[in-house]
Image (cartoon, rainbow, N blue to C red; front, side):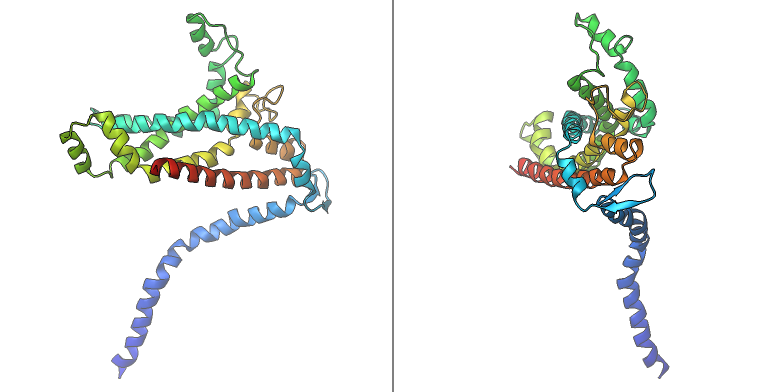
Length: 308
């Protein structure tokens, strides 16, 4: 009698263990996300529809007025242009170089572990220290970059003063920092490519670069899409590099003429420089929507190119 009554209990316990355990394991993430991610996101949406200055104790509900004002804000459109420009100048070269570096690291090299660890060092270096160093390298009067281009007979460039020159300099910081990270992601995907594909290509007389373009790249399509989307998300959120690029001053205007002020910097200026918390929240939500749209477009274009 006892064995008959305990069987349903054991079956129920087994079912709960198999069906319920996965949800218990992932529950801490969703609890933390709800408290530290979802609630601030929803609260920011509410704040974006208010006229709230951090220096004042009162706030007024204004609906979508902040968003309407944002659409006619020339500073916002300038910041968006700068963001897109820096993103294009940094993301495309970064991913292309990462593919080449990963391909080289995937070959039989001496001290491969050393080189694989070495390409990750820029990513773990303090972004503040890196940006200040690059600001000195691209300095107008005593920068090493201007010294190098003068050796080949070119005139020195005021990298911080120009729009394109400042975008190139900031993009170099991003490329230097994230190329190794993406290279290791590509390297992990390359090691999952079956060896018999390369063996068959070698027998057919295909060289290293032919194998790379005809075998490796098509097999890396999901990984390339992933890195392109992630780089898009990170590129549109860029703030530390342009914030500290102006000789390490931390000026949120992004240059004397806002020539390299990104959307993240403009949000920072409005929220913590002018204390317009409601307007800054509207910028944050607009940026969030832009990132979602750009990530979807990036995903669609990359998938079509790699499947074509």
